[in-house]
Length: 145
Length: 207
Image 1 (cartoon, one colour):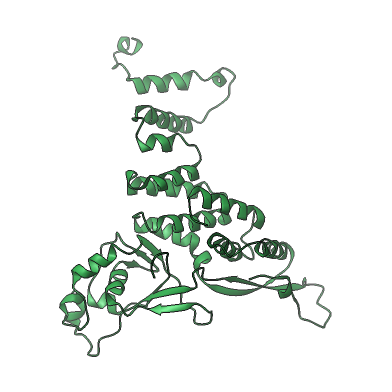
Image 2: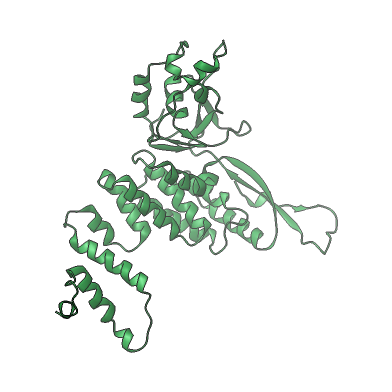
């Protein structure tokens, strides 16, 4: 947040070089509006998957705690139509909810394009695609919690 | 009749209206040149509007001239406007924005208004994301500024100090700060705040 107290001329205490104008330091900050974020990610299985299994849909790899496809498709209907992802920052005071619920994580990661999630996108449920992704972080939306 | 005499097919109502419009402009006699492509686009839109049923949502949309007003109306009309048409309205509204600051303000408002209720193709979401991301991405940056950038920072600080803790003002604060230090070419922070508040109301977002 900007405030008048954040002004300072650098360097301080010395005459400035007249060939370069004096600079003023200003802090600008973009903050989370709700203060909380969801992090969609899948934990790696204890035993690495074979190449063949990585190419198959995650539902057919025999992994524990993977919900059926129908449950994931149903969860998608409760998600926003699209989301813009953000980079996680551990330095600010926001709360990050790492989603242990694999249903929503599969729903989002399978329809992710770069740093956006698009519900109408054709999902890619292959285990390799889902397990080899960076987490997707999005600010909590109204009615999500 | 002249067309028949020349051995050509008789023009339809639309072609006749177009010919009448094109050759009936009073400016022609005075040597004023008109852009034929713009005139044709206006004619086609007017013709489409005439052919629509009174209850057709497109009739309401085409009756508005401002692209942002059209987009706001289409957002409110929900699924009666299909995805491809909505995407067209969205890109037209963005193209009509004069600078980066206004595009970002529009992108942020549209994102918040539409994300829960409207399917969009990935390319349209990407357009929104490109414009709005910096107002959504949490960040803290120290700028070393002077001259016009310093003025922009001071004006932004003054506007932000008058904002409250409502949802709208929190987003407005993020928008204003995301444009520092050099995103205010052609506009002022106070004017952008007014624009943002107007957009917020147009898209019926809750305060």
